[in-house]
Image 1: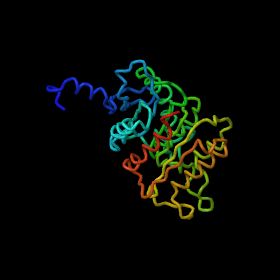
Image 2: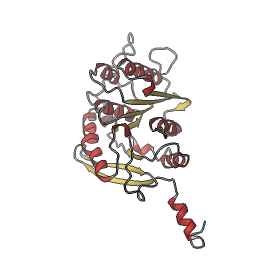
Image 3: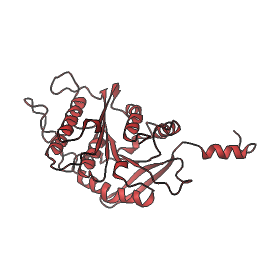
Length: 285
């Protein structure tokens, strides 16, 4: 369609576009992390022409993986199909300190990894979320505030969302590093000492309305520490879902997606993304 020959039709077509507007924010200074933070904000296509609207938020750790999985295209296709409501998606980039900033805030793992996880938690809660609320029109509703991540970023998102259940109504765990442990594997009890599982089981008061989406690929890894014929990533996810149910989370508030031949890659996570978004944000509710 040529603007010069058909200007009115061209403008109408642009106004009806379904692609998100991506705002790239670079070198934002974090006082808590003592470093600059990069993040991308995927604004819904009607954001600028509908100034009274407010939107749900999906916050992603490892936001640098979203372009690789073509997040803009995924959102555009889902908006076009009216599969999900319009959302604000934010991808926070990790840096070289990823292995220290992601983890569990309560304690590092047995190798000392995740020693900055408490600082990262504080960054999310006292810097990033307030910034997003100031600069963008978020609904602020708990049920419409979701934290997700990939691999170790998924563990971090789970840990923070679990601690702040009054803020996050949903959690997305793509190939989560739920193996994170406070001792090395004990041959006589290979499934013991997983930190996040212990945190869940030891939490006294929980909000049973929180929702949990999990994904694993059958080729996420090859390790099988308990020799039960199932890779550890899937075992750890099953055990976490069982623990959540034991703590009172209803089965219908958990969803598990297993991808045959799915790998530990952004390509597999991109394949899983529509399922995550549709389940977390059903269109007609």
